[in-house]
Image (cartoon, protein in one colour):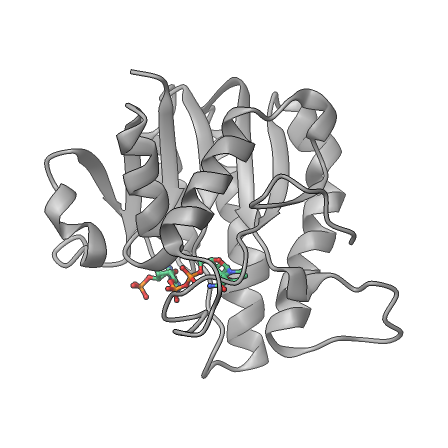
Length: 217
Ligand SMILES: NC(=O)c1ccc[n+]([C@@H]2O[C@H](COP(=O)([O-])OP(=O)(O)OC[C@H]3O[C@@H](n4cnc5c(N)ncnc54)[C@H](OP(=O)(O)O)[C@@H]3O)[C@@H](O)[C@H]2O)c1
């Protein structure tokens, strides 16, 4: 066994691809889905994966999961869950910006991560401000806020023993990315696997793409 990874938001798309990718490399995989009775694209992996129920909007459930994983010595935690189309700004902020920070903080506070373990939050290149003036809203604004909150926490997460990054997974052919996206789930997951399993302390607190290139804020 190479290590133990927790993928948060694993029922579909990139999250499901990450589960398959880490399993293929011989990792022990914990994965969260909103409904354990219908784990979507990882339904065939019931025997290979430790499934946990989590809707990331539910802070109490996230805290309970963190308590369950105390001492789990997770080598990698990936917060992948996210939403885009058909949601209000408030819903986008809750799921894409507030929940990832809160859930990871609960896991770190519970001592679920191994010393020197990796934390990755799935952001988007659309969340990069790139010197834009004024506020950016919608999905982009929610990922920009995630990035800002991550940078605020980066020092304390390093002090907690984490090597933490935000990751742009590429424009990926999922329900969110659509059929015209240029990157397959398998390509994105493979790139993220390489990035996260070769992450050194000097890369902490920064914004990386699935191809291992640094992204501007
Ligand atoms: N695809 C792209 O081109 C692209 C580009 C940039 C960034 N991203 C980011 O990459 C991540 C994955 O995207 P994707 O394309 O794989 O999206 P997707 O196919 O729409 O899948 C989204 C995943 O997030 C889960 N999720 C949504 N709301 C949740 C909640 N409240 N609690 C727990 N899980 C929840 C979904 O679970 P359910 O099945 O229960 O709904 C699903 O597993 C997201 O953070 C997204 O913003 C994607």
